[in-house]
Length: 143
Image (cartoon, rainbow, N blue to C red; front, side, top):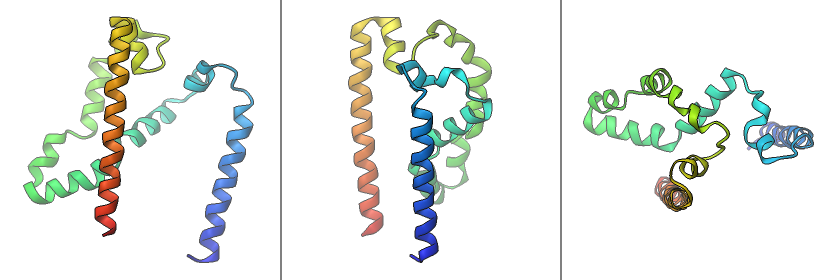
């Protein structure tokens, strides 16, 4: 890497640290941390959902499957249409879960402590398997 590349990376990291420390002073409760006093714009929420949904699986996995199976694989994924359908038909049902900050809170409100525990166990297993698969994919790509 060239000096300009390294200086851009270091500048970005310093700016990120500065913004994080400056805005972190206003955080007093978990609610402040989790939802930021609901000060997010629609565009910021859209970017958050898009960044969550777009990852290694969508970039590498679906491209590989489309190459193997053809365009029918991509058509079966629905893409952004899925989020539109969720927004139009299902979001209004989430009003019952106002004040919930996580999937565990939603399951606790619906099913009590056993539901919250089950959501935590399944979420942990999902995350562990996801990290393992990402490490496997990186190792395969590098080798």
